[in-house]
Length: 231
Image: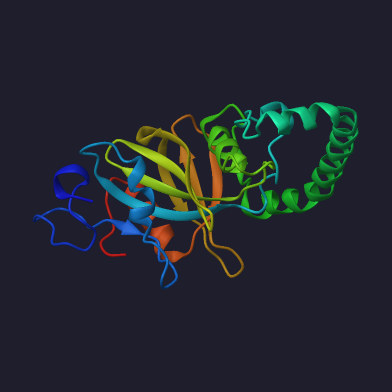
C-alpha cells in the first residue's frame, strides 16, 4: 500500500497526531489483514482498523429463507442441466432441510432465551434493521458456500465506510459494506465464559459479537472516534 493511495504502509512512521492502524493478530506465516482487505480500498481511502469478530453464538444460526439474498450461479450449462434433471429430488431435499432447520431453531430457542435473560438479547431490531442487515450479510458468507451459516468476518474500518470481509483458506471476499455512521457504539461485556461485545447501530438495533480484549478495545475506540495504537 502506497502512502499516496491508501495512507502510510502498516508499521511505517506516521505524521504527528496520526493514530496507528489496528489489525487483529494472525498466526505466523499468514497474510496480514491489512493486505487482505487492500483490494477493496478506494483511491486515497485511509484504513483505520481491521477487527476479526464472530457473531455471538446465541444469535440464530441461519438466516431464515425469506431473508436470504440469492447467491451468484457459479455452475456452467452442464451444471444447470443436471440441476434441472434433479429438480424433483431437490424439492424433497429442500422440504427436509426446511424441517431440519425448523427443528434446530426450536431446539436452540431455550439456550438463546437463557442468554437473553442473563445477558440481554444478542440481536435486537429484526431482520430489516441495520443490525439485521449485518447479520444477514455475515451469515450469507462467501459466494462459494451454499449454506447461510457463516459466523465470522473482518470488520474493516476506513475513513469512509465499514467493509465486511470474509477471509479463509481459499482467499478473501468482500461480503458487503455499511456507512460509518451506522455503527455508533461498542460496549465490552466480557466475563469468564464470554468475549461478548455489543454493537449498537444508529437506528437503535443491536448485535452481539465475540471479540477478545485487543479487538474489543479497538472496536470501542474506533466507534468512539478514536483509534488504538499498535497491532
